[in-house]
Length: 161
Image (cartoon, rainbow, N blue to C red; front, side, top):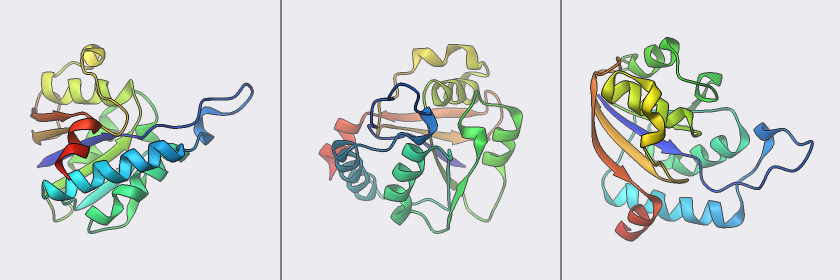
């Protein structure tokens, strides 16, 4: 399978007393993400499934990515915490396609990529996944079962369009 790991775009700063879960994309964040999606389209990226964190900024980012997907957006709290076996099982579910995109947050996405590629999620900080950036992996969604094909910062995705 192909797995596209996408970090949410630039969001508002967290205000004192405000929940981190409700932060929305900034206008610039949405603009950057729209250009990144054009780059994804130019690369021929298509997704059979799109799974996102339920946090506002991730859902908003996923909605911008949704035109590249064949099915409805799925949200799960598993993408708003450290990765667990249940997330790997969800990613690995065979739903008649081979390309899944997920949208979430750091540091958890770095931990997930590290776990899938190297079998150990403790080294996720070694990956620098910028906001609106993406990592492409190929293989089986088990610890150490995938290889990293590309790590694309938003600047690169935007330059492709």
